Structures are given as structure tokens and as C-alpha cells.
Amino acid sequence: MDNTSTKNQHLVSVAAGEVNLEGNLVIPDGATGIVVFAHGSGSSRHSPRNRYVAGVLQQAGLGTLLIDLLTHEEEEIDLITGHLRFDIELLARRLVDTTDWLGQYPQTHHLQIGYFGASTGGGAALVAAAKRPVSVKAVVSRGGRPDLAGSALPDVQAPTLLIVGGYDTPVIEMNQDALEQLRIQKQLEIIPRATHLFEEPGTLAAVAQLASDWFTRYLTPESS
Image (cartoon, rainbow, N blue to C red; front, side):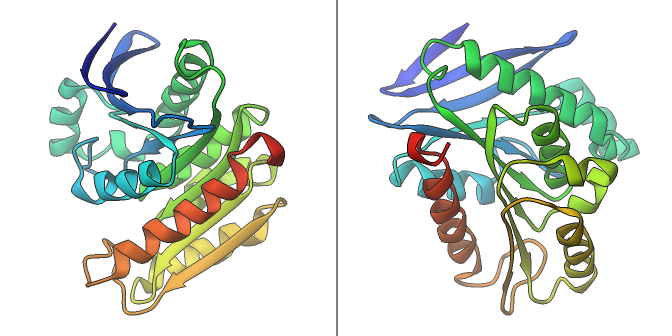
């Protein structure tokens, strides 16, 4: 079910196995692509950083789906244990279910699908992309852990952009290692003077612009 709040904006519930995932869906008029956000460690669809990036993508004419890959109950548990956010197979499986749902939902079935992953969500996005090579057309990872995708990396067929902060040294190395294992169109962008969360002035705007350019390039019928 979905409840329309304003034009082109919907609160949706996506069946994923035995649970339902809550998401905020926005579809601009004339959109040809939609980006699913895979949130990272301890984050949710209410993350101000991801909401900002989603707004930039919407301005570029792209649809967005900010979805919680964990239920409210699971998030409560994860705040204590911290283990579910690193369950990459679980997160990827739910991303796959969300992708399949988009392919059947009347307002999105015609749209090209991309993933925007943050932190551990970056690893989950790449695993899910490998599982749905026909459906997923592009992946962008922000401060992500693509290394957590492991053996799935060589199977990814979606053009992939990895974005890392220049001060996020350990994660830079993880992304460089993952980049070598990707066998498709790929790119690593390092944002100068940015830390892991891109909280420094102008750094998140740079991420959003890079992501917008990447998705605009690959989420069009001509590029498929």
C-alpha cells in the first residue's frame, strides 16, 4: 500500500521475505531512472545526508527510493549489537526484493534502476547488483565498504562509481582494492579534505553532483 502525501511522493511498504520495509518514494515528472538508497551503519531513510543527495538527484529528473533495509525492531537490536548492519547478505537480499518490487510497481516498472550505497550499504549494493545484473544499471558508493561485497565484485555488471573522502585513509585503501576486482566501467573519486561522513563544507555537494552525473549518464534508455 502507499499513501500519497504530495504529488509524486509516496510512503511505500515493500515486502522483503517475512518483513515489510518502509520507504519514501519520489518520482519526478518525466523520470527515466530511479535510485534506491542503501543506508549504512546505524542510518535510516531519514539520514539528512542521503536526503540531501536524493534531493539533488530529484532535481536532475531522477526518481529516488529512500528505504530502511532493517525494520524498526531490527534497528533497535542493531543499536545494541551492531551486527545486522554488517550482515551484507541480508541487506543485499532485501535490496534484491526491493528491486523486484520496483519492477512490478505500476509507477516504477518502466524506470532504469540504480543503487546509491553508503558505508556498509555500499557493499550490499554491489552484492545485490551482481544478483540482478539485468535490472541494475548503475551503482554509486559514498564512503562505502565495497570490499564487503567480497567474491561478488567480479560479477557486478553495473557501471560503478566509488566516492571516498580524502581524509578517510583506511576506506580509501578498501575502495582501491575493490576497484581492482571490478571488471566493468568503474571510477574512484576522492573528495579532497573530506572525512568519512562528508561533513566539511562543500564536500557532500561534490558527492551529490558526481552521483547525479553518473546516474544521469547510465539511467537512460539510450545507455542500456
